[in-house]
Length: 228
Image (cartoon, rainbow, N blue to C red; front, side, top):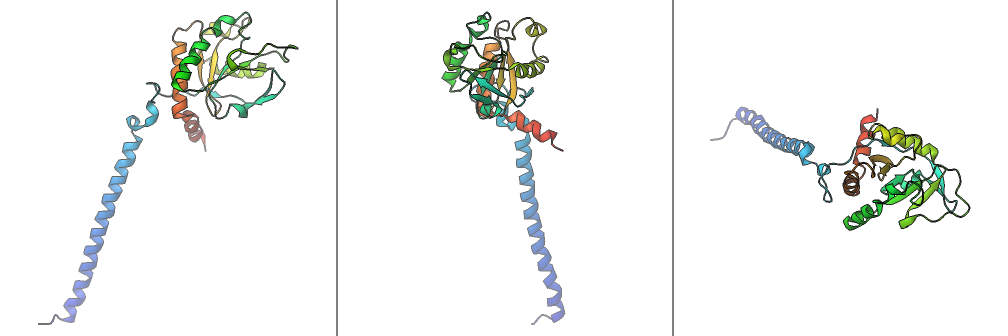
């Protein structure tokens, strides 16, 4: 028996709706799965940045950016902000280890040895406030680099450190003995008083190890949140 034309026309929309309904359920299921994956990735405990292979601490905070600068080294060659990019750097604004403040340099070779075992390259930069080097300056120890006429840069770093370090570190009559850790993007990530703080050396090693693994993540996050 042949179906009437009226019944054939009525059944066609039913198949269309059924197909569309199945497609809709599939799309909904895929969307829900994607949302679950995004939420799982966004959970703090799912982020790789909360810990790193070299240490067990989270990335160190970002205290601010070093201002642009151009200084001269012992040979008179320029050294500017760009030469810190892509490197972990440790800055020191007191006089070199041959001067009166030699004590705060004593633990640095041991710290460098620990970082070397971890595979963490760290360039050490000594920044002198004096405008010009003596006629024949003795070379810095351990491959460190020395810059001159850095009083402005020291002031900028001190301002960032005042919120973190105790007041006695900032006595104007004495050289500032804090070491300043700078990440690969020029961000200041730590201040370490190796004379008075017995935990400073360990924190310095952990923070440098973290920044080698995770990179300047806090710098990127800060720039993103501050964008209009």
